[in-house]
Amino acid sequence: MTDTHDQIAGLLLAAGGGRRLGGRPKALLTHRGRPLVEYAVGVLRAGGCGPVHVVLGARADEVRERAELDGCVIVENPDWAEGMGSSLRAGLESLAGTGARAVVVSLVDQPGIGAEAVARVIARHQDESSLVSAAYDGVRGHPVLFGARHWAGIAAGAVGDQGARGYLKTHEETITLVECGDVAEPYDIDTEADLGHLE
Image (cartoon, rainbow, N blue to C red; front, side, top):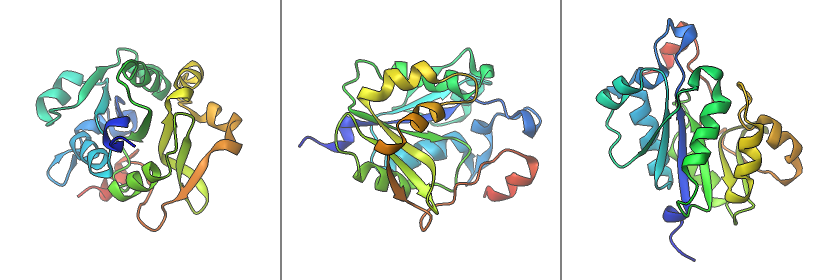
């Protein structure tokens, strides 16, 4: 078997404008002294993904300027305001022709999910038809791994803020759930009150 690191890409969705945070893009929030997008890229890499594709949207130029994203494939989504679905579509399209057999998708606003959860999900990857999801007390969450055979179907259904939800619902019986509640916390940074989770 070839090196897993070369076969499994990371896809970080980091395009949102942070509407409930007064218009502060989540990618630019500070966590451990650096922009949150930079931290999230490090998590994917440490968990075993390579290369990492990052979808930017709101204030993309400022994110590029402030965050250390060397070695990442930067995907700018001009339609980011339509919701997460457009960013997922853009990210999956950017993976075409890269040779990746699967992709691990994570969200920039979930810093409680670290490299160990990513590594657990990758460890359950079998082939290009794999669907693997982290679970928290049995409830599906992020990160999720999509084998390459699913990309077109997921992209076709990714509209508004739906992302892959609809596709995964219709393929529920084929998803491998990996419990990660002992190593990660799946909270989102959505409101001012949530900023207390950042360090």
